[in-house]
Length: 246
Length: 254
Ligand SMILES: Nc1ncnc2c1ncn2[C@@H]1O[C@H](COP(=O)(O)OP(=O)(O)OP(=O)(O)O)[C@@H](O)[C@H]1O
Ligand SMILES: [Mg+2]
Image (tube, rainbow over all chains, first blue to last red; front, top):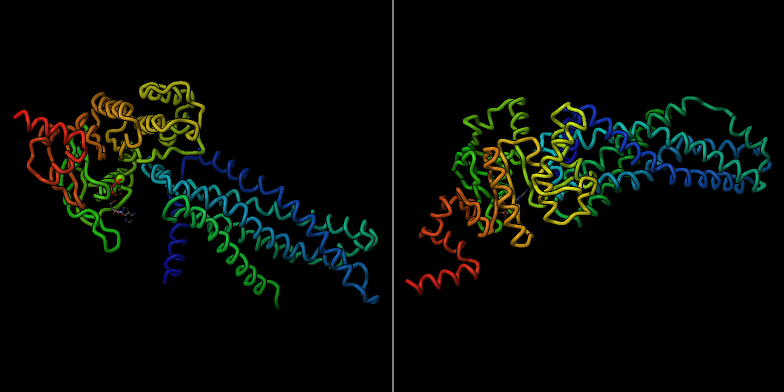
């Protein structure tokens, strides 16, 4: 029962987010601020993790290759496939659910607790549009993060593979270029957009509708992280089932 | 003028407001008083439209809140200023931007023009040279003043204040009370102040509404509040030791 009500309230929230818009000039500023908070400030951690994860995938693939019949190019191929299909879009979204998501919940939640949201309403601002809409727009830039993640993952794999002595440069690059289906990119970016939308809206819902004091803000952030992750994983499963399986 | 007709409000099973009717007059500081938990904040939030009453009606100059269309509601918002119990300043903005915020939402004027108005109201509340500070960097009393500045920057017709002087020392509290009353007179505003502070009642209580457990049990002026025989009211009025002592002296003298 409670879950049904929550789902209903989530969709009602979305409806309000897209109604009575905030003044253009104000909204533009808000969007730039959110791009900075949610996208630019996430680049560091995403770059760091992607680079090393790429390296680890390459090394592990190489270590498991003891059958001489399997070509060495598999190392580059496996790195590319894992990064593009899962690690960049899904893994990075989960990381962002922790970083950007809990940031969203705690800032909106503390505005709720300190009556700043009420203040917005009294001033005549549609607080949901004011707070959530710029986050959704900012998250449209999320695919850029994913591109960077894909690139750095492959670079990390290359460096770890070649300089760790697991593969030659030529083999690795051949692997990277081996049987490439552009549709895999379509799949990856399609789900990235869905994740971006979840990342912007689910933590916002948790912050906006929270009750209580500053202690509950912390709890709401944790809950938001858990739910955003769960929804990302479920969406990932459904999209994969629909787009990749024949 | 604001007229309240038989409003009720419940949260789930709990009936918080149990049919309240009264009027708040223009150019006066109207007070809502009562013990903690009596429903003062809920009533104020009904007046500003943050809560929707379950029944009853609220009239702003004879226009029912429930019958206003979107445009009329927007105009009413523009004419309303509110001072929240905790200040509710926007943490992410400095003082200047906080006060400018309602102006920016409603006017297309350039920033320097808006800034002139912001500085004017900041001066009115005796705050100068704090423009670039953030809410976390100023004292509680200053925060209240910034909130007042933000509430009046749009020249509202209606001003609502939730415990404007709670948590302040008595002298600063009186200053804030007087500031609110002066602004009310200067601009002929309909002001509603929620308080449980007898000092405020003595200072600015032109019309007083007394709530107990969500019911209006008494209303009148500050002169009348000392003459009433309503026990709830006298209990409240003489709840402070200081008042009790003064009263005892008066009784002895008679
Ligand atoms: N959003 C809400 N949901 C449920 N109950 C609420 C809500 N807001 C207030 N109440 C309940 O309404 C009652 C009156 O609360 P209110 O905040 O109006 O008291 P108050 O008179 O302002 O007290 P104080 O002087 O302490 O501020 C309380 O019992 C409170 O628990
Ligand atoms: Mg209160």
